[in-house]
Amino acid sequence: MLRAARPARPARAAGLRPIRRAPARAARAAAGDDTPPAALAAAAAGLPAALTVLASSYVKATTGEGLQGDLLGGLEGVSYLVIAGVVAWSVSTKVRTGAGLPAGPGGLVGAAEGLSYLALAAGVGSIAYAAATAAQ
Image 1 (cartoon, rainbow, N blue to C red):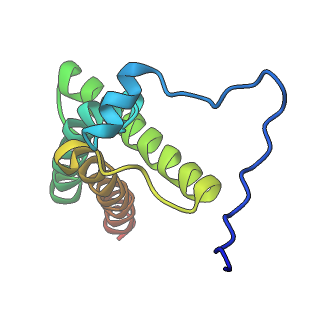
Image 2 (cartoon, rainbow, N blue to C red):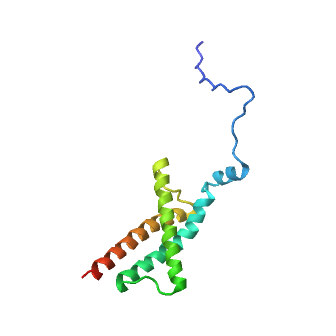
Image 3 (cartoon, rainbow, N blue to C red):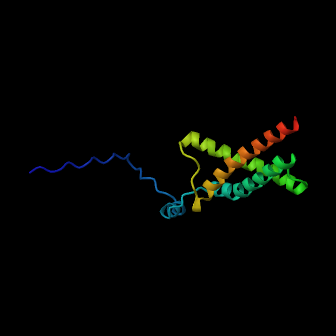
């Protein structure tokens, strides 16, 4: 009688055990949430920063100036830096892995990534528009 051949097991080196995930990471992976904490921080900072830059771009395009006041002006500058960081992280992740940032819980990281790209394009566009209209 012929038996079906079993697939060969990969040979293990003597004394080595398979790598096991840390319990917290395994629990997150089992729950379907394997989003790194840095990505969640990017979402928490990126969403308000993107909205601030979009508001700033609208003000820049309509008045020719950025947000007024020390507090709003500082928030505007920090927001530009945050969205530039999110976009740079997204591009570097895409180049290294072939995929963008993880969607995150409820799609928050993906939303922050998408809004950051939109806000960066709006910011560059409003600056170009303000420069073009000021030259006339």
